[in-house]
Image 1 (cartoon, rainbow, N blue to C red):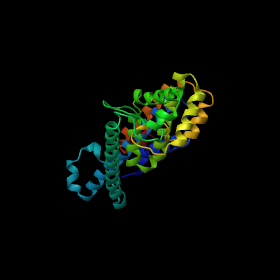
Image 2 (cartoon, rainbow, N blue to C red; image 1 turned 90 degrees about the vertical axis):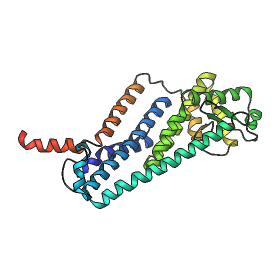
Image 3 (cartoon, one colour; image 1 turned 30 degrees about the horizontal axis):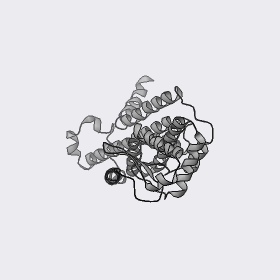
Length: 296
C-alpha cells in the first residue's frame, strides 16, 4: 500500500475542520447546504477509505483469496498492509457505523415522541416551540409560550418554525448528526450546521414579519425562559442564541444569488471527486509514477 490512499480523506477532513472554524460569509441558507454536503461526503470518504484498506488487509492475510477480489478494490502495488493500519481500518468504520445507528435510532424515537405530542399544546409553563417534520407533524408549542408571548412575538415563532418545515431542515440536521456520530472530528461542523439552519429560519422570520428587532427580542425572551436541550428536531431557541441575536440586530445578509450557487456547486464537485478518488487515487498515482521514466 501507499499513503496516497488516505489523501482524499485527509483533504476532506481538513476542509470540514476549516469550514467549522471559519465558515464562509454566505447567507445562512447556502452555509447550511455547504456544511451538510461537506460533512456527508467526508463521512462517505472515511468509510470508503476504511473499506478499501480493510479489503486489502484481508488480501494481505490471505493472498490466495485476492484472486477473487475485483481489480479496482486492490491497491496498485503488492506491498502488504501493516497490521496496525489494517486492524484500525476494519474496527474504526465498524464502530462508526454502530454509533451512527444508535444516533439514527435516537432521532427516530425523538421524532415519534414529538409527533405523538404535536396534537395539542404541551402542558408546561416553559415557552417551547418545536418544528416537527412528517405527515403528522407541525409546530409543537407549549401553553407557556402561548401565554407569555404577544401576538407579534407568536407570529415570529410560527414563521421561524414554518421555515424549518418548509426547507426540511431536519434532513440537514440528520446529515450532520449521523456524520458526527460516525466520525467524531465532524462534531464542530455539525454544531455549525445546526446554527446555520437556525440562522436560516431567523432570516425567513425577519423577512416575513418585516421587523428584525422583534425577531431578536422574541428569540432572547424565549431563550432566557427555556432549558437548553438539542434533539432531532428544531426548537426555536436551542443554539447560538447570542450570535443569532447579534446577527438579527445587524445588517441583513446578502442573498448570494450568484456566489452561493457557484461556491456550493464547486464544493460539491470537489467533495464528490475526492470521495470517488478514495478507491482509485493510489492506482492513478502509481500509473503516473510508472510513466515518468518512459516520458523522460
